[in-house]
Image (cartoon, rainbow, N blue to C red; front, top):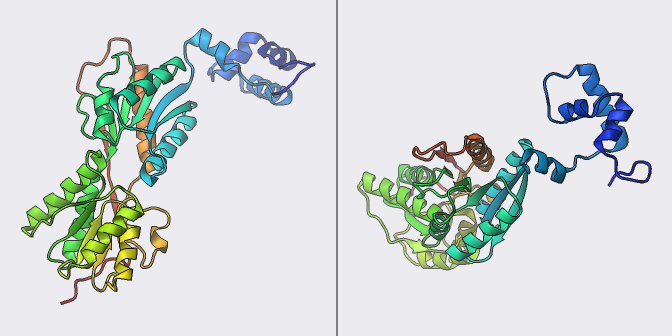
Length: 342
């Protein structure tokens, strides 16, 4: 903490050193347009010389704005939720907001309520909830109407403002890519039941197969982690009719590749494998993994933008259908997929 004459510097010290009024310092700090450039420079120089830092608590008492957004997340050990949260945090900082985060250990409606209540005690201005699970979306339905909230990846939340990646569209891209390579059908290793992202990817995969008029294999459910991809990959490796697999995320695809290698199934010569997420390691796997990329930065920016729009609305405004922003996904072809051999 900076010290000035044995104490923390205050706004009056900045005004005295810059030779301006207390009100002028306040205008500079708040970005008021009616301040001469030369005056702004003097005030900024005084701020830097003194090491002055704004008292956010005092400012909040005057403006009733804390510049803090509450975020609720779940299982940030997984790549998708972790990158989504990082994208939101970067976007919040760019707009001058701080993020107060609660990470849930269990997914229950009660846990969601408790997290939101805790954040309310921190005087956050609004809430962003990473809601990849149906239970989280249901928990948000219990929140008071005066809590501005945006659900991220809450694609099945018609009564809430939502920002989500086009999960079904991304799955369609991967499945269509594999069919275009000549594979008779595409098997799918999914994420867990009740995860909205997993449901969206199943929907896109199944719809693409049905539209192509090809068989729709049974879905195999994993838990997003490499071990489950490995175990389910061992099952698929025993079926000689399997020539193409769309895996619900890259971490499970990593396990699937290991299972195929141990079983002597060559990728992509015998089986083509595609994943989802485009984790940083995907291009360095053996072989480099074809996958679907999600723009987490765009998700973060749209989430913050949407929440700030809600905060700027006059009390009692709204009443129309909540805004849903869908961020497109992108296919990244690599060497783990190839034309089917006769």
